[in-house]
Image (cartoon, rainbow, N blue to C red; front, side, top):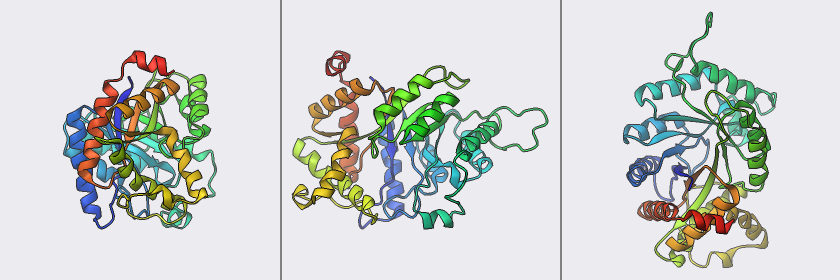
Length: 338
């Protein structure tokens, strides 16, 4: 079975505050650490009323400080929004505070809309080759210092914080392969190019000092509950949030509702149909079977599980069921599903 990890969007639920969302993130991190999850990532998003992790490095420090062994990192830092030197200093500081526990996942999307990107002092018309160059520059600041190197990241230089390339297209797959870095695909919200991206990454992978063979991480939605009906009810919060985002009206994570499908237009049904490609919804047995089929299809090395559930206790319970279900998959069942 693949390694199991957590992607937390630090959801701000309807009627709650960012402070409550960040407290819930820490509580979820402590819960998933006790269960045995391997790593815990938070994501950079800006001007999003339903996501509390805009200051991603600060949130990582909050999570790492409240846990003891869980790897904590970014899924990801949107590098074009930042100077590579400042990112190296931030994550070098985190690595100094929490040795051998910090990950640095990197993406090239703005993580927001065009107006907000401008407020971040980012130009959306920059050279498309800049992201690979920025990754290499950042990598240099985290490596051992070179002779006559004039700019050093302190803290950061020599920390060797591991890098991960995030993506939802073939571009990220190819870059991760060329640089010999792990590749994390955003299949939890954009699964269309998943299989092509995985194949390209594996075919073109070049070993590096950090990684000797391809390592594929896939974002995966799990909404688990004691009954199938309850799981589908809880799932409506995440689906409503996805529709709101795709229709240009992002907001707090809404409460679940009954008879959700009856409210959907044909266009909305089409939008949501794609989201099922990387999702497991149901009780213990159903989640176990759905995950087994997904693992057989993708041969993924690590599942990074996200769960957009309104009620915090129900969310923690979903991660408990998910961990037990995933760790009870027989490899024979995976082969049979394949």
